[in-house]
Image (cartoon, rainbow, N blue to C red; front, side, top):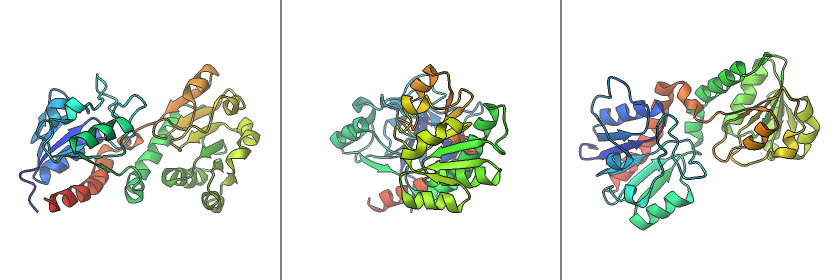
Length: 295
């Protein structure tokens, strides 16, 4: 399958996108890029666009980041000096029929794509890709905890809210490090798995009983589950780490007002950009090959 006439735009993201752009060049595509940290030496074979619209101009396929879009519609681009909010005018520069591969799209992006005949391919919830980048995310979360606490993980009381793919990897790691891990989840199967891994399992309704004893709380559900009333129950030294996509698990504004240290640990896959960039590419390339086969 030839990629020689395929133009790929890599827009927004972090250092992972550098590796994704390199992978796209090696596959034979013409690559245009904007919005992620640009190395001083450049990226061989990649055109560094002046803005997102320039990167998307003439692209058959656009690659947007895995981390979720913010409530105002901006793509994940922590090092970009401007917010990248996909507009109709920006997207209409793509070739027809266009395709966008990304973690997940919001209603605004989906609306523009429907009007322009652009197909969205979402892969945020692909379990195989989540597992491939999971170790880097777990290492990133451990780094956040170590840098923001004055206690060891060993013997600390940690509450994990949510027990999906990343939550379960965190549970296994924290249990292995000797933490007293409490897992709060709605799904009884997930709670049973957490119990089997050595954690104490709780329903969400039991959280108020346990929060006063917690040193660290980690949220991994992209839905607000910890609001002001629950946060008031935490000790003042507690660290809150939210690893979920927008809007996150924790009411971070309320936590700040209550004087609780909170870290929104988005994009933890960037902790190992080459490893994670290549794992993401393995999912992206499957989708691109599917698109090219239909031509």
